[in-house]
Length: 55
Image (cartoon, rainbow, N blue to C red):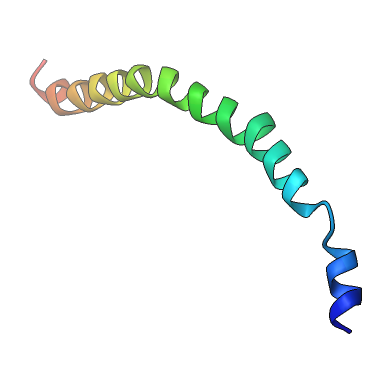
């Protein structure tokens, strides 16, 4: 039973590395680039909603 499960899991670590390099790292880089712009837009929207009744 133990040998069968080892054979079935062969190559899974390579798949994990491919997932990390191909999907997670580019996604993290995109989030780091776009996050300041999103925070700025949210800040502007909040300021607009708060100041709108006084205009």
